[in-house]
Amino acid sequence: MSATRVLVVEDDPSVRGLLHTLLSAEGYEVATASDGLAGLVKATASHPALVLLDLMMPDLGGVRVLEELRDDPELADIPVIVVTGKIDAVPGMRALLGEDNVFVKPFAVAELLTRVGDVTGGPISA
Image (cartoon, rainbow, N blue to C red; front, top):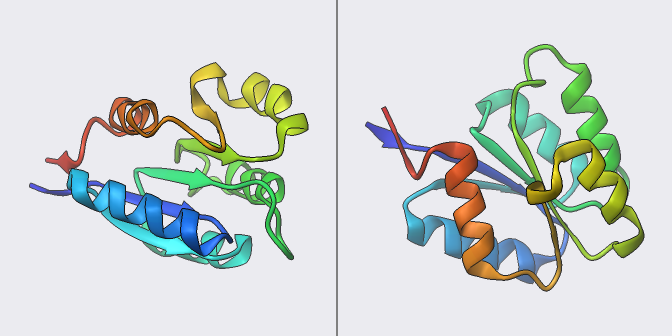
């Protein structure tokens, strides 16, 4: 049994830290990246069970990260949950990822943790 790996890709240090703390407290193994490029590198290296992805980031934004993940056969199967403050992008992301996989900041912590558990199967993997 090992902890389920979740990758948080978020440029805002306070949100990144909050997500790290919340997920770690639930028992997940959490890696973080402060920008899209670092997120792609970490996703390639660790193949997490889930990527929590912000959309608005400098350099490589979340939409591009999502495209890169989907275009890579090795990474295309990684589920993505978007956590964003970019309201105008929400309908498109929900159409792409599903209604339940897009959270608007500020998000309801309990709802996000429930969704992470649903997607990953929980913090402990066999």
